[in-house]
Length: 481
Image (cartoon, rainbow, N blue to C red; front, side):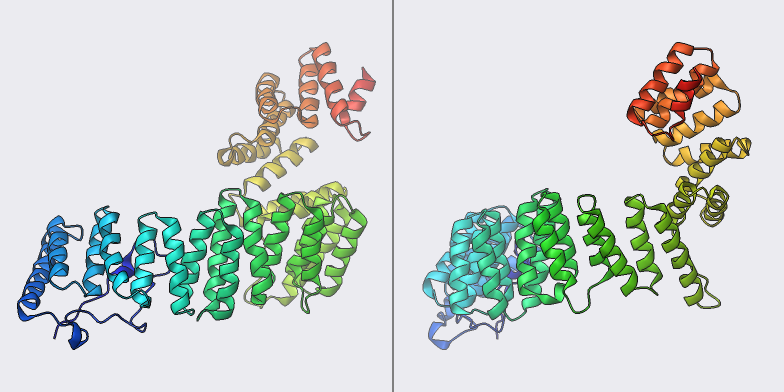
């Protein structure tokens, strides 16, 4: 007994494996099918011989063998009703980059039985592989009139419509698939991946369409879809849609902490009071969750509310310690240390900031942010300058073009009285960081130390222009001159 194997499931452009499958109604093949279609003995012998010869060629010359293709074509001539043979010809032709041969073979099969699902969908896949998109779209639609359940066909058809810039038609196909396909969750996976492709190419408006479809069709995607949609609408400067999506998410019976923080970020800085209200709601709802309190604290940091940052992150640390197992103390991240240290500094708790950064460096010796931060605090306090110099140099090995890190090193040189080295470093920081008021202030101080009074005053004035606050030390320097 002869058995022909379907080969078209390996077509290179199929999205989710084989489109046709063995449980679909198959066209009777000339040798393995109905007796009505059996060829005469001579044709049978010739087809078997050519098939065996083609297999040998594939084994000896590889899966793109020209001789194998010729042998399969000769076998198909001897047994023209055998769809499995047609798919063998099509697959090998596609591997060889000869799509017209593949299409011709499968068109012949399809014409003999246009209501056969397997013949219909295999021809659609061949059209797709041959980049004959309009014909592939039409053929996939015909396949769905024969059998409306194969999820892979909905995905292939939607993909071609997206590729042809027919987004509305593509989403209509997906919508239909959600109600008829055998595996609707795969449609959600497809939409998500299609949206990711759009995002990768900065086509945010088309990504929005995919995620809006997910939002409507698959409630299991909460809250991920809402969060991504909000970010996309923010990228598109659509504040109204951003807020609307997040409001819907907050109305969920169990809103997640990420929804609250996303809403606060969306409201700030245009509506700071409402942003604070959202953060307070999150803090109240998740009062014993250290990770949530940390997330809320980071938003307060963005809003420059250091006292709230200290309160929330200290509570977060206490809760994490209390909730940890005795033999597994909590492990805090570098951002936790740096954000809390910055809040300590801004609330005049410099000793606490330095102790926290030292702890971070002990636990994470390669934390270049902590190394630079602590080195700068010591330079500002004119203390531990040799250790500060070592830390600054270490931080620059991780980020050699970071203007703030270079400024720190220059400021340490200034404190050590190495003014020429300080000037070289901070000039470099100025070139990289452009007009930063802190860097300009330091340039003024260094020029003053070098006796360049006019240059010093010029840099201080630039610093005050950018930062006129009384806290800017450049104001005091100008007053003294």
